[in-house]
Image 1 (cartoon, rainbow, N blue to C red):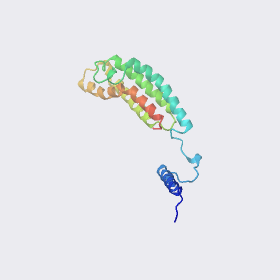
Image 2: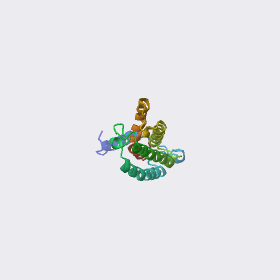
Image 3: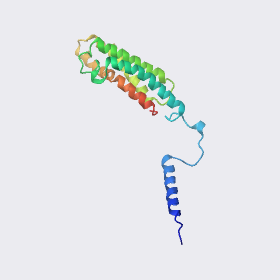
Image 4: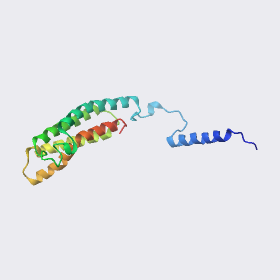
Length: 172
């Protein structure tokens, strides 16, 4: 039996296409767009919303991070002498306001699980820091110790919110 020179490459090409279809979940059936959820970042409305949220949040985060710093450069860093001072209290209020702003921006939106979690955790940390009176240089060792965890979350708040907004662009 004589083979045609193009039959082997054609068969290989068909095999590659079939493999790609199976790996990507293509079934060959038409897709019902009305039944497909639009939470993927490639959905036009979701991508536009994610970009809008990121831009709006970045404007606030940039200004507050420049003013207060973040991580070990934050007055709320657990290694900072200002953790029990008004400087950290001001940074905490700013971080809490940014977290609330983020939650307002994504209210009712899908695809922002990370940003929502980070913002809620940050607001809880700010509330704890304020409830404990951490910015007032508390004397009891137990109170000072209890201030460490919320202060650490606050110190990392601006970068964590930014990361959450960036992940929102990918639908996470």
